[in-house]
Structures are given as C-alpha cells and as structure tokens.
Length: 325
Ligand code: F6P
Image (tube, rainbow, N blue to C red):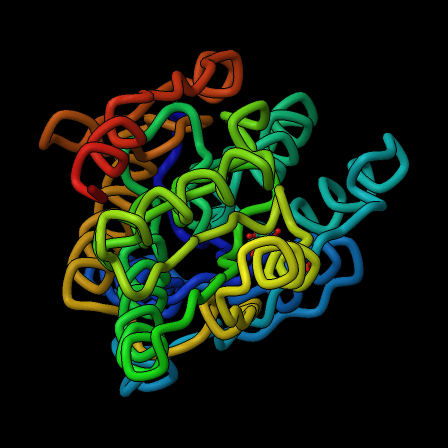
C-alpha cells in the first residue's frame, strides 16, 4: 500500500464470539484517532456483497465493550466460496472507496480474505471463535468466555449430581475441535472427557468401565464432558444408566456458550488485536492475520497462516485422566 489510509471497512463473520464487539470498538476508535473513516459491514461477507453498510463513529461503539454477540451481526456466507461472490464483494469494496478491510472471524472467514486479496482487497484478519481452532494463533477471541461459561455450568451440575450421587454428562460446543471440552473438563474437575481428536478413546464401553472403577474406589458421583463433535450425550447417559445402574442425566449447553458478556481477558485481547489491526493497515502491512503466540502479538501472512496445522497436544488430556482418580 503506497497511499494514505482514509477509509476502512470492518465485518464479523462465521459463528459469533464474545469479545467481537470489543474488537469492533477498538478498530473504530483506533481508526478515528488517526483520521480514518470506518464503515461497519453487516452480516459478514453477505453485507459486503450486498452493500449493507453503515458509517461508524465513536458513539456507535460506546457501551459495547462488555456486550456479547456482535453489533454488526454475523453470518456464514456460502456465496463467498464462489468466484462470482468474491468478485461482487471486491467490486463493492472498490465502489465504497475502502483502503482496507478488517475481518473478525475464524479460518473460514480468513479464506475469504485470501480470495479477496487476489482482487486487490487489502485485508487484515482478527481471530475470533469460541472453538480455538485457528492454527496460526494460540488465542482466539471468545474462547475464554465460552470456557468460563462451561465451567460455571459444570460446577452447578456437580452440585446436583453430588447431592443425588448421580453421573452427569455435559455436552459442550466444538464440532471439530475438543479445546472447549478439554478446558471445561480440567476447569470443572471432570472424570472423563470425550473429544474429536481422540475419537478412538471416546467409546461408551471405556467410559462405563472407568465409572464403575471410580465407584468401586468410593467415588459417589461422576462428571463426563463430551464435545459436540462426539455428540450422542443423551444416548451415552442412557447407556451408562442401563449398564451400571448409576442414575445419569445429560445436559447439552449448546449455543449458551456463544453468548454472554466477554471475560476481562477476551475484552483486553480483542481490544489489543483491534488496535494492532488498524496500526498494521496504516503501516501498509496488509493481507495478514493478527495472532497471539507465546505471550506476544504478531502479524502472519494470510497464506502462511492458512497453511499451518494446529497440533493437538495430548498432555492436557493425560493430566485430566491423572487428576480424576
Ligand atoms: O462458532 C463455533 C461453533 O459454535 C461450533 O462450536 C459449533 O459447532 C458451530 O459453531 C455451530 O454453528 P451454528 O451456530 O452455525 O449452528
């Protein structure tokens, strides 16, 4: 980028995540502080393809730092997977006179950035998903809040399953990734956790065997955390009850974990990432993802970021097993 930045767009895309609003606020206020105009694009890439936009001023983003969801709304835009959709979005970007686009979302949203870059759109991605399944960043906006929501729910389930000497099966979100399940299991002191990354260990036979062993050692109540990607919690609860005679109840937290006021960590990191995104644009450092790794922020080339693979670390799984005796 060789010209002065005058106008940028910002959108939120994919599943919403607590802290997205904090990131929008930071983008808008950092830009305005540097005399850059900001347009908010509604409903993710759909809004860009259809020109559904709104100028954002400092007041538009007041009182949103601690609010869940996204004031810009979000969507999964299938049309962006087509060349026609990408061209449409790039055209609107040009018609609006944008110098850059900030995309707050997950890997799918960043693939949209990569496609748009080919049409001359200057993008910066900010990682936001409750699933933590973005390869280039150890942190994603919303994960901390989702885990806190999950742990709070699990603690409540513990109270009641303890009172009745029951087993509780708690299903948390994460279709392809077990990070929420692992963190909730560790934070909630679960006896068992079933995650997509260790599918072969997720058998009901193994869980039931473990629960019986726990009971024989004097454990009067048990908690099993199941990731959405494994699913079948109601069926698992029935199987546990039928086979062991231990009363078992299943609870599916579902989209509850996507809502709520962001934690302090999510507010702070989202604010810093929004600030860094705009500063990067001003430096001409575009077509990058703002990442957080080993305690530091960095910007990573989109192509490189999307080619990375998230390595699953089985250590947390092992620790949960060790601590559950
Ligand atoms: O945003 C991530 C996520 O919540 C996953 O955990 C879940 O599998 C998926 O989105 C659900 O998507 P939707 O809200 O579109 O049903």
